Image (cartoon, rainbow, N blue to C red):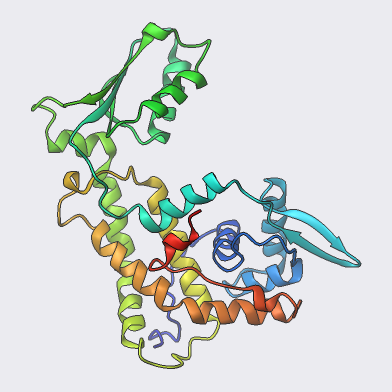
Amino acid sequence: MSHPTGSTMPRFQQGPRPQQLLTVLLGDHWYLRSEPVPSAALVDLLAVFDITASGARAAIQRLAQRGFFTLVKQGRQTAYSVPPMSQERVNEHVRRLFLSHLPPEWDGTWTLVAYSLPEDAKEVRRAIRERLRQQGFGNLYDAVWVRPGDHAEQVAQVRRAFRGALRAEQLTAFTGARLPEQAGARSIRDAFGLAELARDYRAFNRRWRPVAERVEAAANATDPGLGGEALRVRASIMADWRRLRHADPLLPHELLGDDYPLHEAVTICTTVYDGLGPYAEAAFRRILGAHASELAPLVSHHTFAASTTLLA
C-alpha cells in the first residue's frame, strides 16, 4: 500500500505545525497519561514528519510555555509530562473530534441574539461578534446572530464576559425562536460561512480519498508494510480533521443537505484513522521504547468506532 512516489502520505508545501502534530500524537497514543516522556523521544517522533531536531526542540519549548507540557528533570535526562485536564474539557474534545458528525436531534427552533450599541463602541461590538462566532452563532443580519437549538447558557456566558461593558438592555436573546420564511437556506449558509467550509471539506476529500482507498484495499493484510509511515499519515489526517471540526459550526444535518462534503469526509477520515491505528501505535511504541523501554507498554490508540469509551 505505497504511494506512487514511495510514500502513502500526500505531499503539500504546508502541513500541520510541529506543535499541532505533538498534541495530536500524545492526545491519541499517550491519552490522559501523566508519565513524563523523554524529550529525545519527542524529537524522534517529530523526525517521522521530516522535522529537524532544532525545530522539534523549539516546538517542545513553545508547548511548555503554553502550559501543554511540564518540564521534568530525571537525572541528566530531560522529560516532559502533560498536565491533567478536567474531565469536562476532555469530554468536549472527544465529542468535537469523534462524535460531532453524528446527526443531532433538532426541533427546528433557534436561539436568537440581537444587540444595539452606540457608534463609539466599535471595540465592544467587534469583541461581541468574535465571542458569538466562537460560541457557534452565525451572523444572520447586521446585529442579529442565530444558532440552532437552545443555547441560553452560551448567551449567559456572553453577558458575563461583557459585564460592565454591556448593559442588559443592549443585548436581547430569544430561545425557542422560529426564523421567518425570508431567512431561507441561502441566508443560513451565508450566516455560517458554509460555502467556504464546504470548499475546505472538498479539499480534504481530494487529499485523503486516495489514501483511504489504499488503506481499505490493504485491510485484510496482516502487515501492509507501512512502518513509521502509518504514524505519519494518521497524525496528519487527524490534524487536518481537527482543524475542520473546530471551524465547523456543527449545524443539524437538515441544514446541510445530503450532498454536503462533510459526509464523505467522515467516511474517509474514519477509514484512514481507524484502519491505521494498530500500526501507528506500534510505531509510536517503537520510538518511545528506544528511549524508555518501561513506558512502551503504556502506548495506546483511539478509534472513531470506540470513541464513546473515552467519555466519562
